[in-house]
Length: 247
Ligand SMILES: Nc1ncnc2c1ncn2[C@@H]1O[C@H](COP(=O)(O)OP(=O)(O)OP(=O)(O)O)[C@@H](O)[C@H]1O
Image 1 (cartoon, helix red, strand yellow):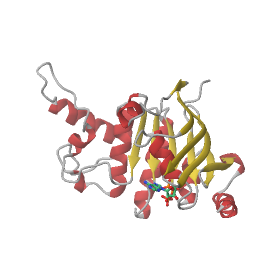
Image 2 (tube, rainbow, N blue to C red):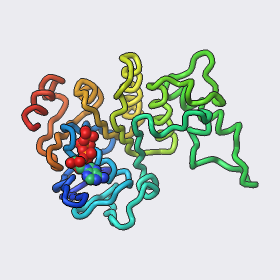
Image 3 (spheres, rainbow, N blue to C red):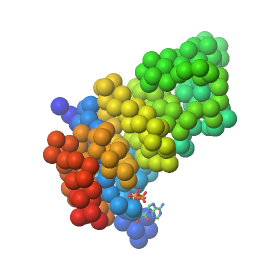
């Protein structure tokens, strides 16, 4: 089966800094991979390239078998091909309502071009309650995002990506700065992605979290994938040992 994402020899420099030095990476259908690497290893640069925020200098990138022209790659193009990124706490507007956030930039309109407010409210709540199990007293589509906990905000961003048919959801440090209970929620949402048939790329400095959600682990050092491991042969402790070896 054609992989969802195939990177071969991807390089990216910022002036004299070589952030990526020939990355090879494959992501398959309904698979979650964990990207592991020390500070400055190149993880963020890699996901910026995948999500279209940055372009790459050389190498080849294929999404669902289609070769990507680095000059035409953009966030919009990546989204069109089903790649969505959930950034830590940055993808939601605090004071805006939950339903507006959910449909931000992709509102459903009627024949007159007006936003279908009731439909969007209903759909947003359906995804949050049925797919992600959020809810409880007081949660309504019209409430501001600020009423949601840190974990629930990540859930909203993940639910939104699923609703808009993302094939691949990239989670960049989604558990950083969250309380333990909230971390559990976010790890649960990430597993929901996989149960829903999606794929994911999960980045975290906490290797217990990465171990928990990913099927396969890629270790990055100095802008290259230097080691790969599968869940069945690993434990959180063995991942930590391997990271120390490559740091
Ligand atoms: N916009 C930029 N301009 C100059 N150098 C950059 C830029 N972005 C990243 N770099 C450099 O590229 C290298 C890889 O950085 P990157 O942020 O991708 O690493 P990372 O693995 O995500 O690190 P961290 O875990 O600390 O977020 C680093 O040396 C970094 O300083």
